[in-house]
Length: 81
Figure 1 (cartoon, rainbow, N blue to C red):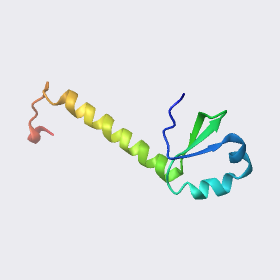
Figure 2: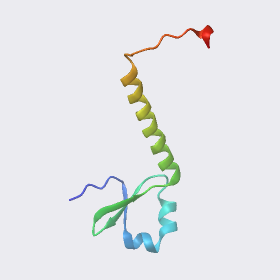
Figure 3: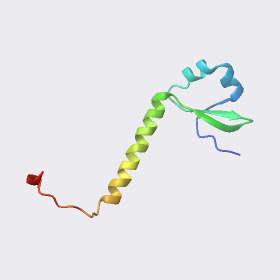
Figure 4: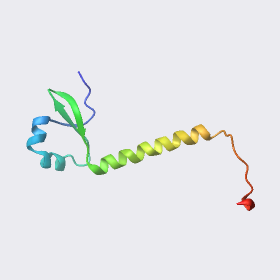
């Protein structure tokens, strides 16, 4: 059986019938959309999605910092700038 990665879930049919209500009830949390009791998609409010993208960007930045932490470094003369 597929893992549902959300506390809330609905069927595709229910989503079609009650989209606005379901989105309002999502309360800034993802909702698993099930098709034949299997996750087909996840519906996420815009604010949640934006936070998710920001966290992903932060993780990518942290990885880049780790990769570059030990050089090589370029010495510059600030007066030459």
